[in-house]
Length: 145
Image (cartoon, rainbow, N blue to C red; front, side, top):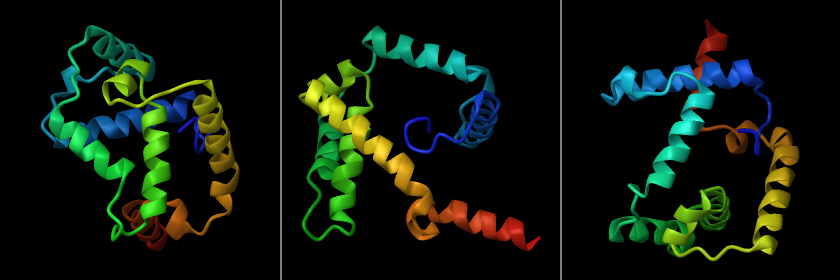
């Protein structure tokens, strides 16, 4: 959010986290297992990544391959490739390496520049490109009430 939208302050990020905690509960993740604050969540993620418990399986490599090299018939193929670069570029270095993603200062600079460009251009895009469809529908429904 900070790199692509940048509209939330600390309180807004905390509210978003708490909303996502509800979504996680719907997926049967007990609330007591979820770090209660954004800083606690960041620490938890760092600990999990540093622990070595996360592994990139063959199945994960196959799925990643679909994003990195979408089939020619895939809708939005160029967009998927760019989003894939952003997603892999924002992973912790160890996970990026586990996926076999080569990284260097030039790629880091390109990532930062392209995300900065996205942050600038995104508000100018039509809602169909700027928003996830389900979020747009929810906003329209809320506005109609």
